[in-house]
Every structure is written in structure tokens, then in C-alpha cells.
Amino acid sequence: MPISGVVITCRTEATEKVLADLGQYQSLEIHGSDNKGNIVAVIESDTSEDMERLIDTINKHEDIFNVGMTYLNTEDEAEQMARGERLAKPFGFRKPLAPDPSDDTQ
Image 1 (cartoon, rainbow, N blue to C red):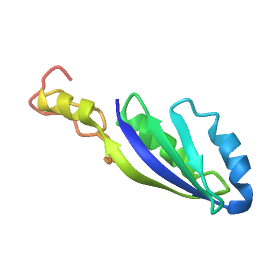
Image 2 (cartoon, rainbow, N blue to C red):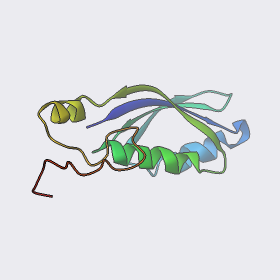
Image 3 (cartoon, helix red, strand yellow):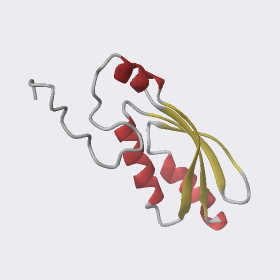
Image 4 (cartoon, rainbow, N blue to C red):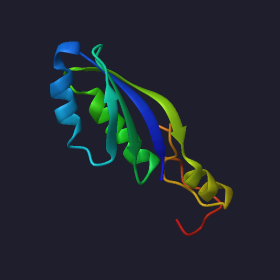
């Protein structure tokens, strides 16, 4: 389960609205905000792809300037890859990985 710490920067005058809007995401936990439009949150998702999708969605909010990742732990996925398991899309890869040519089950 990937976990990340993020700082979400929004319009100062819209902070309360943004906080309310962010409340709809079950995988996002808000830990605080300040009067400068900074919101500190943690994202826990099932996969890296889910996390990237959520960050992209939040970044499209009309009152949000940026979602800055300050911490990322993908240990579970790293362990899967170390065991030789292929992940459809590890964190940071914009395109799915090409099929493994040596894997004849695909």
C-alpha cells in the first residue's frame, strides 16, 4: 500500500472550500492547514496508479495551485518487484510497462 505525505497549496480565500472538497476522498487524510493556503495531508492508496490518479484529480481543482509530495513509501510494491512480480504501473511511470517478452502467460 503506497503512502505519501503531501502539501496541497490553494488560494488562501478558498481554503475552507478546498478542505471541504478534499473531504470526499477516503484515501486522503488531512492533518492541518495554515492561513497561507497550505494543507498538509497523507494519501494511502491500494496502488501507485491509484495514488497518481488521485493526485492528478486534486491538481485539477480550480482553487488548487499544486500538490507537492514530501514523502513517499512504496515498500510493498518494491517488495513485489523484488520477488519478480510485475506491477502494471509502478509509481512515476506515466505509461504502463511493456509486457515482459519472456513471460509466455501474457
